[in-house]
Image 1 (cartoon, rainbow, N blue to C red):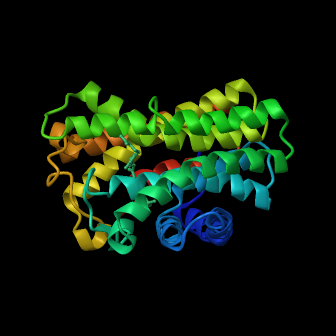
Image 2: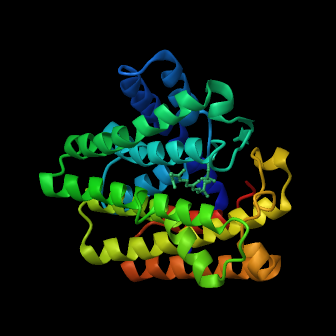
Image 3: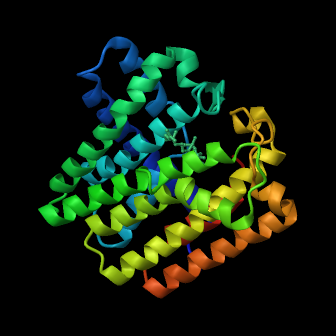
Length: 303
Ligand code: GRG
């Protein structure tokens, strides 16, 4: 499986940027109607100020690879995953969690809009994301069963058996030296669950067969781990200016793939996960050059 070249992937990501941002703007405008001004500002700050938009892109590429067409409703579906991601970063940065000042090269949402507004905006984004996923499925012509399955996938990945559970393990792990299985388990939930859900939602909404869905989940699990390993490598090797965020894992006394394996071995493990992701794509027999390019991008990215 060769896949798209890095240049083709860059062009593709550039092409997706405007419709993804437009879908996020639509989501924030719809949500804003029921919110006070300070909470509206916090939601806008958390959702529409940058980020790589990897999760919506994964959802879109999966949907397309499984036969779907990229309409506004498809972008709305993809944006629903990013709403969850955005809230998780807003809450993660709060003083009661990582107490971060900087995210995406800008002051964090609570530094701009205050803790109360950030807490409420983040909480409002969770049901908004679920409702948006459901409405998008309906607009895409999914029947009730499929719409529920897609929405369930998003909520399960976001909850205690997914991202929230992973974050909890992460907080409990501060100041402790976690072993390989603990670290994998934590990140499978904290980072991997939502990345995997983005792919699964696209596949489900497009009506992919169970075996293709399973291969895409395997691909998602592999790139989820690769993504986190590289996140740890970047955290250990790049400056605050390059990463646009603080504090570092070392400051928070967190176990990382770098503290566990060292840089060289961590990099090798990320590459192994990319091979695993590419094998899953081959097994699915999917004609999806962007998915193979995205697997490589995850380990080659510089921020
Ligand atoms: C109350 C326990 C509890 C949890 C609430 C806060 C929270 C839920 C979850 C946090 C989960 C979290 C911070 C996951 C981080 C995943 C990760 C690697 C984020 C960085 O993703 P990128 O690089 O970010 O895609 P951009 O900025 O590009 O969008």
